[in-house]
Image (tube, rainbow, N blue to C red; front, top):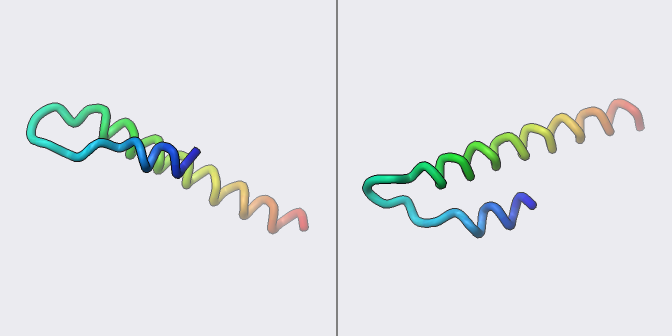
Length: 45
């Protein structure tokens, strides 16, 4: 999912980049969840 969102981010242009910012925020959230899940997995194994 992370790679799909990365590939779908359009070029940043002058003007309306709202979609780009949403995709960047989504990627940041996915990376955060991935890090938390990895830390949790390390604790239980």
